[in-house]
Image (cartoon, rainbow, N blue to C red; front, side):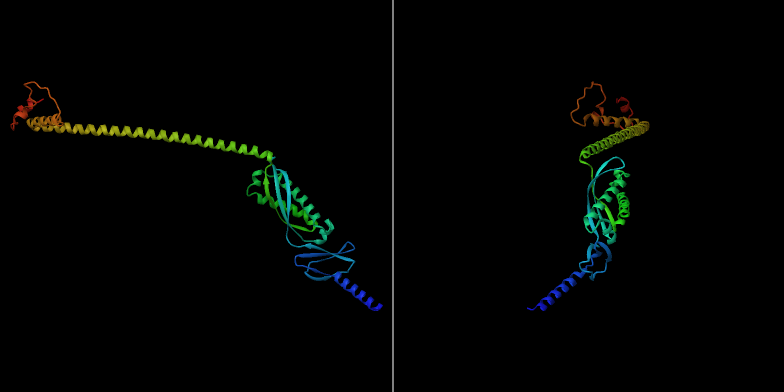
Length: 299
């Protein structure tokens, strides 16, 4: 192999290497910052094949998708002096690679450390003015919107757009949990005791009203019964008197027969009578119509 062929192959190899190092591809999920000797030159956001000066310029790729970052747990003091361990996460997107590079450099660790610091500060600042009940209720949406706006305002100078900040978990410190549970238990016991007392009071009131109504009803019923009974007895006496006045003899006979029925109905009655007693006269002799002497002799 002659010298000229070797030189030609070497030149061809240099050209291939130079062309290969000068061409690069930008994916749809990326954006690229071109630097020259460490100084930013331009930003490429269009996907496809692009070129740069080999050995002079470098292409630094940044993800343009929505990124998630979990913030480590931090203890926060709320507005009511309650302590809360808060786990949160943030979702962000790199919108300006030039600012990103100028602020924290080409690595992702720098922006994550900065985002962690900003989110933690915003959490302490905003939650420090809120009550525990607000954090655990529907007010959390408003609180998280405020935190997100503050974080986004601070991170905009780093070329990052913070889309959302959320509390993933909020727990009371272990040393406070038992005390709070004890207070909650005492409160529930107090409410239960109050409910039982109110129930017992209502039961006693209902029973007293029922007893009073029962007494009134019984008294009214007795009075009505006595009145009706008296009226019935008065009518009976009037009927007896009218019957006696119409036919004293027949009334005497009828009264005697009624006495027989009451005395001998059970079949075991015993009577002690004198020889001249007229009680059994109707059993010995039938009454004569119009005879008033029978009634006069009967008891």
